[in-house]
Length: 99
Image (spheres, rainbow, N blue to C red):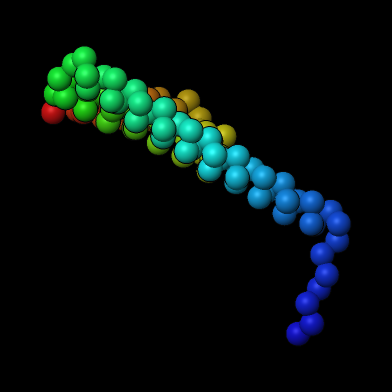
């Protein structure tokens, strides 16, 4: 089958997606670098038994927020689902804090 040529509008849309992807990758790399610096500073001042659960909690918060934003999950939530997410997140945070 012959290939259909892209219209200029379709080409611009593809470029925008690539720019957003590159921006997300660069932002992720910068945040990873900053978190490693923060982890190193924390481990210099405190014992790992206090720091590691905090890092786990921060990772959980980051995953929940990024997953909700990227997959647009928060748009579909009503009050009961939002309350369930908050309660489930708090339960995970408490579990990570005590173990």
